Image 1 (cartoon, rainbow, N blue to C red):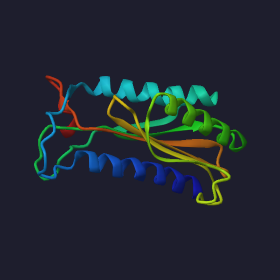
Image 2 (cartoon, helix red, strand yellow):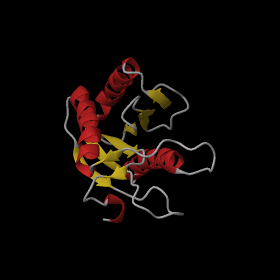
Image 3 (cartoon, helix red, strand yellow):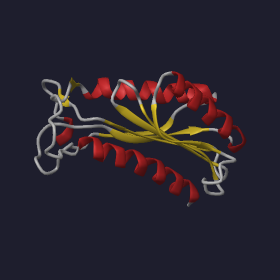
Length: 173
């Protein structure tokens, strides 16, 4: 149950960031969404999550990726990618791994919404660490959460909105 809770927290954090990134507020218009293939976006995100697993000395498991529409009020073809993965890792190695990820992302100038590891008292008793950050240029967010009761890191991700490449329609697939 606690593992599902940690995984749900990671996915929820990225979902909130995804939702706010894709909302049309009617204010200043942003440039049109970039055209990308589903495979290109997934490869970019997957490479970063594999880099996290490499830092932890592990692998990526239970990979899931979905491509929801960006604007439910005006259904079109714009889409984003959200998903999750797990990185098997003993609970006693999670804090060091999360600190290594934090260090790597800090050097690369990721923007952090959350960056905590134990013994931070704001974390619940079973959470070993929590990171939530935006890639500085690639247009995606990643959350990493560890738990002392599970031998894995929970990873969630979400991208900004894209226009589909010719012949693709990920939002309506």
